Length: 223
Image (cartoon, rainbow, N blue to C red; front, side):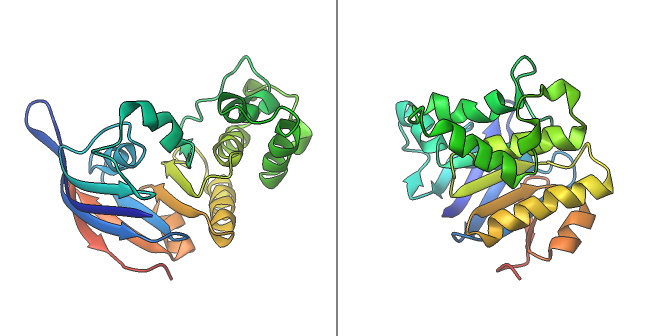
């Protein structure tokens, strides 16, 4: 699913955000990526989604070499990846339903199929009754669940989450974790970048720790 071999990411000014990263994540694994602020967690996710390209090394995701992936193919590559952001990135002038439907519309899903897929995703995160509401009227935890529904509506085999509970209290964080665990149990590969050790300890899954751009700990296969 994901294999990095001697991957470096250098930004202008000779700043190495990632240095000599070697990792392999199997299909269906759930992995937590942790480390201090600026350790390289978000940069790693950006490489996996082809938002950024490695400076050197080999990065394979879903069988594709990211260094050789043509720019025109990136949108198609990303259809196989769901991404959950800390700040939700919802369209505030669109309803919950419309926010979740957007990826389906962009990818040209049969319009007759869209309602079923959207409502299935909303039911999965417990928000079907709020499909006609606007995000601004929802709580922070509900907005995050809308973001998760949008990320999984295309049924991607890979789900990434960048600090998904950073703005939530512990009870809501546990609810979000339970959703990710459920997706994992259904065969989705899940990567969660977080510094929340409560979530990491509760999930009891594989942990990769970054420190100043280097992978300093990897607990191995998921428990």
